[in-house]
Image 1 (cartoon, rainbow, N blue to C red):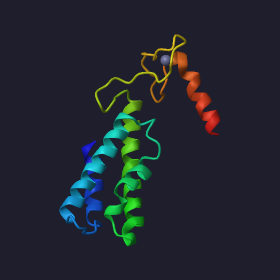
Image 2 (cartoon, protein in one colour):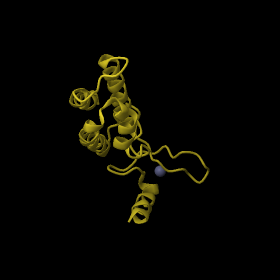
Image 3 (cartoon, protein in one colour):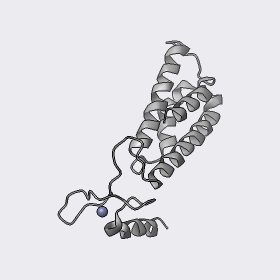
Length: 139
Ligand SMILES: [Zn+2]
């Protein structure tokens, strides 16, 4: 996932405004935030709501006002690419964190379902209907 945080950081670093602690500190902070956001996206794809907005809120004070709009669009583009990549890997059955993918459902006994999800789904064959319900609710 490092290619995403690194290239996002490289594009954003040019917009960083010098502050009291100097540009070096601000850039270090920017890099840490970019890496944390991309890592969280990889580990927590479905529970990380609005990743671009969350990262932007983390780092927006590092940019002058005149650069905030462009900084947000850079963040949005890179986080979308990273999310697409995570989804693609999940669809082929790969988890980026090395933890095997498991069904997101809770069983009737109240424990987490440990079965392998269907390709492209968050759920195993017995809990597949939960995916449809989610889509219906969203629509
Ligand atoms: Zn299941």
